[in-house]
Length: 508
Image (cartoon, rainbow, N blue to C red; front, side):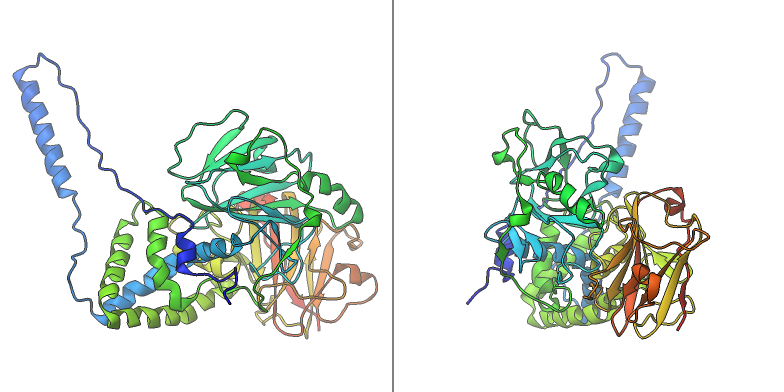
């Protein structure tokens, strides 16, 4: 029996991905009626020079009908796998999440919704979540996927008051588009999300139009919440007014949904992140990725090579086998290593790495693919900077059998206008369930104990440090774990790299 969560190419095609078109643009100049002979000659020479230049600028496309030898095919296929991995990842997430028959919680945990709508949590995300690695335990999340060329979506923004919030919106490349959040001084109202080829007029009552560069888009709102019963109660009214819906449902009135009463929707389960890119199916989906996402300046050569590869493989069964084996090998040898933090971003000091070009990757394929594998859906650098470590300050792998101290000197906690946190992840970059139900520590916590000199020491390990240190303890799994600092709406020290994360010191 076929599940509503089964991903097939046909399902994805139903989402309406259209091929991009190229427009030939010509220029011309009006010529005055009266001209001197010298002027005419000069104009003629200029026109000839422009014509010659134009002729020279025509680039030869890859020849068709050639026999591509196996090693060349493998070379291009590897690059195609790296380039297309985040996009196919996004395509498959949309195809799965939007199959939800109604707005609800997949397996009672993850917000899901039909295409064009948003599902929203009412509290921190459950540790059982496996939709995306490195989830956040400082915010209330939402999730929705859209096809914006054929169905513009209204994003409803309530009055958040002084509370930190950001609506992170992503295109098919995993780059953010639009600017909605406290850091942008965004006003309450109704914002219309549209695709690159949408040609409608701004309806009355819409505050602004935000255009996505691809038709495939999604949003993951993040609303800061203190770790107190009082704030969990106070946030409900504003969270219930975070609503996204198709333009056809817009009536100019603020809609309200009581997110705490969402029904549970059955879905797939996994002990690690859901496998969104299946190597054996990748090259069957690459053509759609090329059709869905227009080439960035300079990418035309890549597109031409990838299309030649796909066209040739469609006619040559042996070549198609090469693509299949290359995809499987590339997943193991190229994609899997990105799960190690040392291959993400740049060194940040004291054994940590920090995010680079996050959510504004452009043609930075290395960091885009690395992030899509290790911790997809970052915020852009001005919204959030991420610091991550697999090892302690001495270079040894972090392990729950040891006990660690992370000490921030007085006044040296991450300088932010929003909030900061230190989060613990297991070897799958997911939460480690524990009796304290504690997965991060930082701004949200009101009971952290500071040292007499004003410094702040946090503790990590499978064994509690005991006594009054327990409030500052992050419980770890028995095996490998990693640590992750978030700095939301960072100040100068975060943005310019002058702030350094503290040493992770093993004490036992």
